[in-house]
Image 1 (cartoon, rainbow, N blue to C red):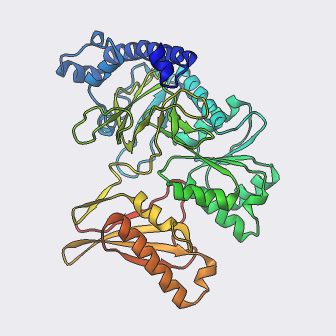
Image 2: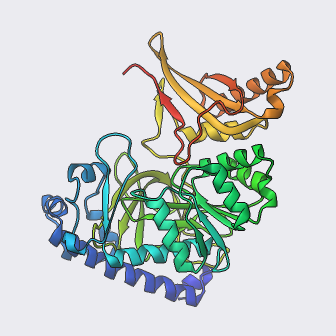
Image 3: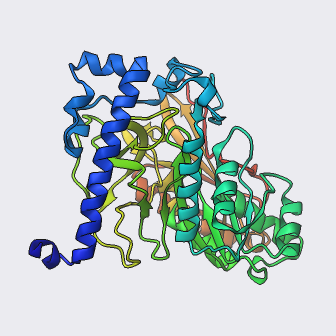
Length: 437
């Protein structure tokens, strides 16, 4: 016990961690047995490795089990990974993929209760209570964002305004008229709301809204700073994915120093994305998640492709749940230009570090004379656009230097007029790939 106390872990925290480990192991063994007994795809993967559920004796044994990947869901479309009969499935959701068939996920009634609970916790972690008016501007329907946030807010006892996505001017009107104090949506859509409000002569900083809970797409700390200063709110990052449960896997607390993972329901690992080797806490790699309490479609060691690290040091907020670092990039978002790995988040960080632009940009990949090239189109602010040509050229040079300095490649950067880059009312599409393949 003294070892843990010397490491700034109180006796009570030690007991909590030990209880959590026991609970995780109990749930892990149960869910592995459930998946092995009811999901042929998983059982075949286990049998190939001569593994059985009884081989899971400790939490570290999880590393022996096979990974699951997104193609597993597509290959077994629509219900091949379900572990319960359809008579027990009370809701279906599906991914918002743009090509091929969607990824389908199912929930039992108890699965929905788990989802409501973790979303309730997530919203509470963001400082929200039953006294708040929460406007849910994620899309409803097959996308998990809208209904996930909706039922979590109801479980919290808050007043819910289910606007869904789109109809932005009406969103702003209701935000003002209903006294909305919190908004749940994608960060790119909230940036669009701020723009539209300004065009109508409304300053977001004068509205009652004080909290934004943003997710469903990668975003940077620079984007957070823009949002918080423009709207006068605290902007919190929430993480989830349809394959696991939807939003509510992890969320930031008031410290905004990483997202606490609800480890009693979702067990996190970090692996080397190339070798699959499990990495220790603190090292960056690919996030792998295992659902410990989702029975309609258990996901064992699901490779998210999201790049992050686990932060095990105590958080100043007092929560003992481990955190994951901000996810601003995915391994499958990366593109390679002349042998250099580039992430869109790197370009966003550079662009938003220079004053004079909006948060709207496109990255256009093309091929010229057999070489891959990058063009970045970024909108300038109204004030700068109406300024002298000399100021525009100075800004272009500053932005070009910022991006090239960060990614180590020559780029073509174009300043475009305000409101010329298409806005998104859901997930933003930043990269346009026109390369010859």
